[in-house]
Image (cartoon, rainbow, N blue to C red; front, side):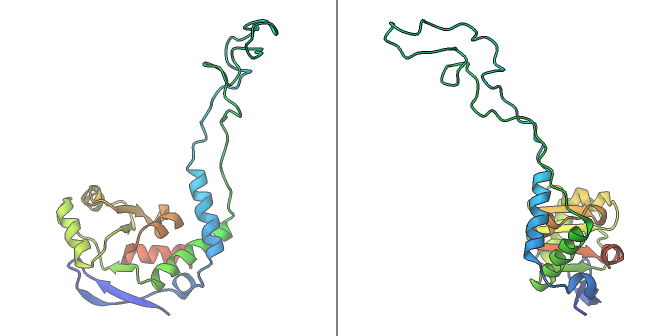
Length: 206
């Protein structure tokens, strides 16, 4: 059973926390991680891009000049792609980029991502994040105490003080256990949990 150090808000080590083998000691499945991250990024795309083909551009019904005898290249329409105001070749159209992933694969990817963080030493657990005031400098003190740079802070429930204190720090993001996803776990170098958020993760994924 893996374990990590438990820190207080001052960055002092006050004990250790045992982690669930089912979640934090799994073999990292790179193929599953790739599949889930690809699906996540694809599902963020709006797919609202659109342009007009030569059939949809207004005008161009008349032949611009006669077929032969002018010395110029033959043209059938002023809305052909080579003309100004002409249509677009293979114009992009609205489409759905969504990739569906089943629940079993999602759970496996989440366990792989969390296990990878433990293996890399990128998991930090705090006893609690009781910041005195919603000020950026207060959160910077907490992060500097544990030498966390690019960090994802996972909260058990909405905490406006921590969210506001973290909002202006580059490369730091706060999220809730309920909205935690594989892409963000892998994107940030350090995953910061509290004892309560760790308990919730183990309750959901164990």
